Every structure is written in structure tokens, then in C-alpha cells.
Length: 120
Figure 1 (cartoon, rainbow, N blue to C red):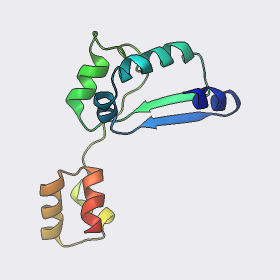
Figure 2 (figure 1 turned 180 degrees about the vertical axis):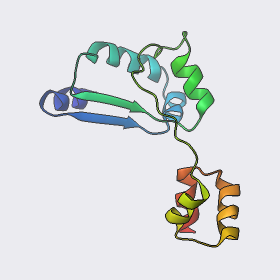
Figure 3 (figure 1 turned 90 degrees about the vertical axis):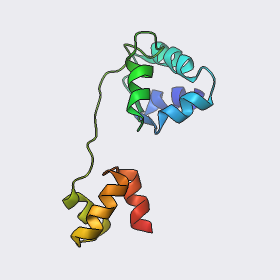
Figure 4 (figure 1 turned 120 degrees about the vertical axis):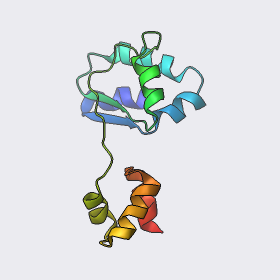
């Protein structure tokens, strides 16, 4: 966190915690530590913190719940929708409808899984 403090004094920083639920469950009191950091640095316009997570239930209960250390600190929220079949076709470079339906039925249109299927 010292690095963030020093760097955000001279330049704009966006810190992204991808799959935040994994971090929150792996490191004891990580949400409490993040809460204290946000509270102390809330006026720092150069620093933006983004929390991402594919577990909607975790994100809702651990961020939006009044008992959560992070409650009331959210400034924006984005729900990403699943890819459509045409988007999957563009992403995977496949055009055969049968292939697209198979991919969608396995991944549910989730981006990270689409990329893994494309590699296969």
C-alpha cells in the first residue's frame, strides 16, 4: 500500500482487484484493511480502486451488506452481461451455429471461459 500512496501523489492510478472474492477469503481481514485504506485515502482523486468478482452473491453480501466493512464505500457498479452468440462468434472466430451453441452451453457466455475455449 505504501507504493500506492507514493505513486498516486504524482500520477493517476487505477488499481484493479480481479476476482476480489478469492483475495477476501485468502487474506484474513483483507476487507477491513481495504476499508481502512479507503477511508484514509478517500479524498485522493488520483487513486481509483476497482473490485471485480464473478461471484455475484459474494459481491452483494460482502460489499452491499450493512454489516460489511466495505458497506457505503462503493461509488459505482457495473453488471456485465453474458456474450450473445454473435459476440461469441466474433471472439472465437467460429461461424458454425452448432459450435457456437456448444460453446455457449458450456460457458454461459462468460468472457473468461470464452477465452479458455478459444485456446483449445
